[in-house]
Amino acid sequence: MKIKGIEFPESLINALRNNKLVVFAGAGVSMGDSAKLPNFEELALAIAEGTSYSFDRDKDTEDHFLGILKHAGVDIHNRAKDILSKNKDIEPTNLHHYLLKLYLDMEQIRIVTTNYDLLFEGAAERDSITIPEMFCAPALPLGGDFTGIVHLHGSLSKHTGMILSDADFGRAYLTEGWARRFLLEMFRSYTVLFVGYRHNDTIIKYLARALPVNGAYERYALIGENEDLQHWNILGIKPILYPKPDENDFSILNEGVRAFSDIIRRGYMKWQRVIRELAAKKPPVNEEDISIIEFALKDNTLTGYFTSTARSPEWIDWLDSRELLNSLFKDGSLSDIDLKLADWLAENYAINHADYIFLLIAKHNLRLNHDFWHRLVLMFNPTKTPKEALNNAALSRWIYILMESLPKTNARSYLLLQNLGGQCAIHEMINELLLVFCPMARCRLSLRPYAFDFNLFKDLKDSSLLSRIDIQVRPYADRYLLNKFWKKYIKPNLKQLSDPLLENIVRFLEETKFDIMFMEQGNS
Image 1: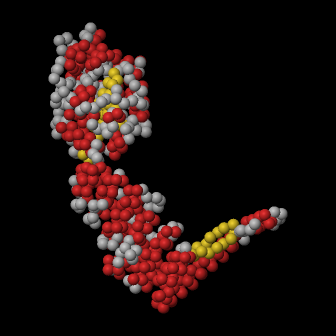
Image 2: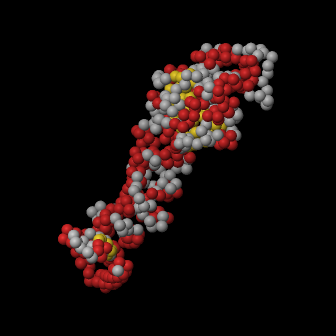
Image 3: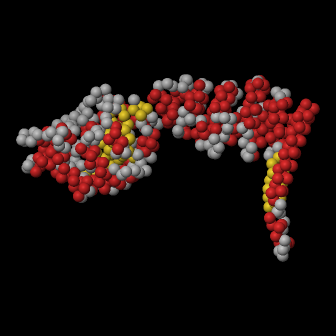
């Protein structure tokens, strides 16, 4: 779904709805206005202030540099605490609030952060959100079953345990491995959305060690469109790009997450208003409006809002071009959504805009799903569609199309042919009437084992009877329906139908005779 210029994948939306999403928040979440906390590199530089050591990003990494400082006697943990907590008026960023509000059920909040600040907790307090639980490394929950906020690298509340130096990271991900174990289970159990990271973050390099090669759940990262995508792809993390006018402009990210949160939490009453406003017009060209309709047509209730309002024939080609009508032209059972679309097409366009449906059927090579076929034929019930509503040319085209695509093995199809026969009689369309009748009268072979009472022939020595096949010839239509059709529509017009009807009967008999002879020869 396209929201504020950001394409949010459907699987991400489904993960939220199914309570299977973990938001994985990095330094970028706490760098916005009202917090303005440093990223990891800036924190390392601030810790080194006043020492004789300087950080060269081209030759070293932040964790190794902090390890050097610690080895030199610098209390990196206390310095980090002082730097991150020196501003007493610090407030959560908008992104903290928006990410919390992604969750429909606050009891199902799952946020993992490598940040040391407590701004998510602050945002929850201001929004009157009760966090289920808070975890701080190394005391981590089971990665496959947790709710709440997890401070993966420690927090200001227990600053001596913060993961800062290479030795700290080594314990967390290698020797003791508690961070790696937690993450492995988490990635196997949830869809994960990374927010606030860059591809070259030192922390990402460590996280890569805990990423399973594959799994049942997706991994995504919200990143600026100027980022290096190759690194994310190598890690099996799918980038979700957001427009970034300049290096420090995260406004579109903030607005996108806010709007995404609003849509996820949108109730059916608001959805009804939004969808009906769009459906009442011609198909949209705006990407976000297109996304809303496409999203709606994957939900049964939302599809109902669309079909109850959309009336422009241009919607037919719009939906078909996006393959949203494909199921109506394939074998098999239709979903509730497909059935709503089938009803919508039949009831609104089959009679009043028949040419649009003819074109649609032609694009799909005259192959109709039997449920869609039934709904179209129901529109020709004489009590529902009076004579004046149909002109002969359109009705004739409909009959040829519907008989060409007749689901021959479906008993209900022959029952519904009464509708077409009635319209043919009303419109005095003799040729079309015969076209409808002949498939009903056409015969088929029915093969059954020869029936006899085994109890009467217990000592039967001639086993040839056991392999005999009883061949029966039956019309496709139920005999009662066939007689009814004959009396009501064929018999009153027999004078005009006699010659072509006789030709068809002779042909049917010849074909049936050939089939019976073939079967008897094959059975001899």
